[in-house]
Image: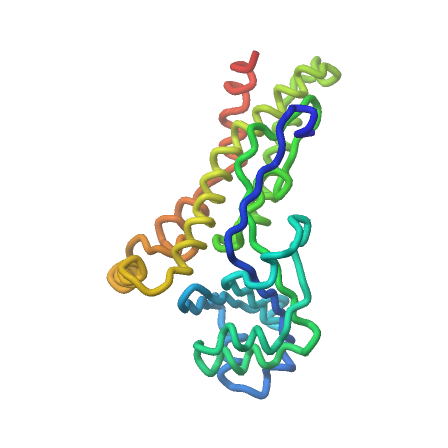
Length: 267
């Protein structure tokens, strides 16, 4: 589609990579501290110098899902098509050797040979998501870094809004290609500003969470300390103002209220 439009997707390396880990309840049950994490309803983030870990229970607390982000040392010489590699457990433990003993015990549970590392890239905003009767959704048009935990949510919202827009095409124009394209354009107008904002916030958090020693890190830590749970914090995923913005957004209500106006405004 992009080639037809005379453009291309542009991507940039972040200098970061991620380990993705899923541990079973039976593997953690022997350790009371681990079990407390698994049984908690809390998402936990551990932040260190230039790296962090986020973890939470899933599957009715039978699985502990762990995602890390750290300096990329394994993909520098890889081709642009390479996004994953089989990682080394020893290297993973070394990368997080400065973290607390609990993290050491958790990571030590990962079976040798099951360490998977992902390269983290950012993609520049596409000029459009629509061409004729084709519309892109989710990662196809707004791939995002994981630091805001909104990738899947945005894709689901895209699908819901797209369905709403298509369902509102006037019945006497259902066979009209121009009307279909206009409806898809309304979908883009409704979703693109919101998803672009969230993608940018995820990138911001990725930079902020991975600061090295210096004044910028000291200022970040001061904001965490002073603002706590009441104000804006550098980690946008945990920031109350950002959470309110994300979770108060009713994409379906907006589509219902704005479709006719936007549809009529398109030539």
